[in-house]
Length: 261
Image (cartoon, helix red, strand yellow):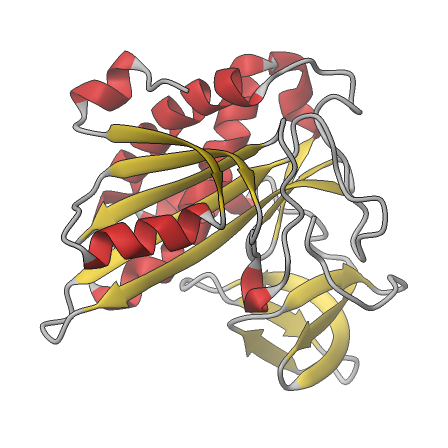
């Protein structure tokens, strides 16, 4: 793995690892030991990869597993916006390496990247905050380059299955440059309105009937829009609107289950 010159010039560093439990766990441990970002950690494979809500993320060799450690990237309440920043960076990276594929890449709220209607990348934002509210943020990114789960609740795919021979190393180089650009656009949260506009322009399922599942149960309605904070606005069958901060979104007829993959 290597960083692009743009990332190096912006002060990013890279630690490339072999097989680890989880790149996010490695990043957290190093941050607690005093490591400062911006620091990328990549792995050839993971034995304890995870997605949102502690779901398992299948992590065989050949795919991209990377975490970006950021020190004080924004005020505490703006850190969750990094999920939108990262999703756009993944899309930008795919577009830079395989321009013909970019038009098929869409973004699934709140943290997945799709080719057509199949998931090939997931994002996990984690972090800590000190007593003074200083934020340590970790952006975990998994991209299916050469393989994908066959039994995921949300249909999955990988770049090779889509006819694109882009390996993890080449994709990571593009990602390291794309992330620089999107973080600069975000400006610690000051530029989130434009980030959100760019994300919305590639939103999967916008205007369509969906099922939203979270710890509060399941709700059905129409994916009406996103609000200024990035929350999903669900139009309920009775015409009312509900803002949802977290959950899993499926097409209305999708089967239930884990969306990792």
